[in-house]
Image (tube, rainbow, N blue to C red; front, side, top):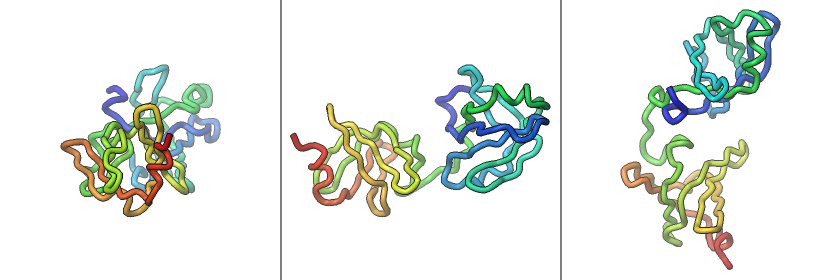
Length: 176
């Protein structure tokens, strides 16, 4: 399994007790959907290593207390701290309409209804209060707030995202 076939679910946040349990932080919108995982991949020295889950208990604010198979004490758990955790892309349900996963739209062409072609998506900047779409337009950057109604059409075949940006926002970024 390699990272191109996976999505980042979060990371190993801290140790939990001294019997090898860890706290995972699920950096996703709906962490409760991951409360019955059987396994995760952890990035250990650049290699995605599978770890089976013996027990998992969801906690508040995206955290889960987890006992990983074969990790039985603090010395075995400590090297996993702050390591990213991954799951295969294939487990994600297919989305339709204007709903999308952040990783799915990277390199999509953004076309505004009024302005026309804006550029290609570099990343979705996941600020909890106000997520942004970061777009590269030649040597300039455009940031669009990912607000309700911004994305009006998503064409997965042509990898195009049509948006209705607030008046003047794109011009503000691209003005010389």
